[in-house]
Image 1 (cartoon, rainbow, N blue to C red):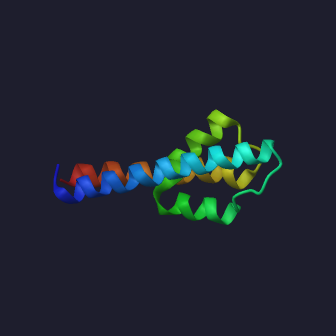
Image 2: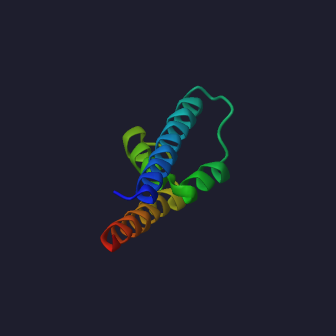
Image 3: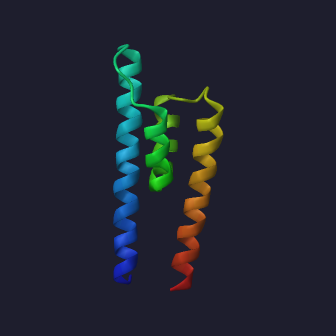
Length: 92
């Protein structure tokens, strides 16, 4: 794997773990009726590469599943990112 591939893999891994933890934290805070993470913050992290982690967390924790933007947007964005990564991998 070329260096840029390792950097890209590390970046997306960090972003997805971050998004997963943010969704877990937001779900926990929702149950405890505490201060929540803004949806705009969640979307920012998703667009910066954390969509797959957000989608996984959404399904596992049943969090944001009633929000059409999340229930359609996160899977769609995840497919886009995974497709791009596969295409980039195929180029080299």
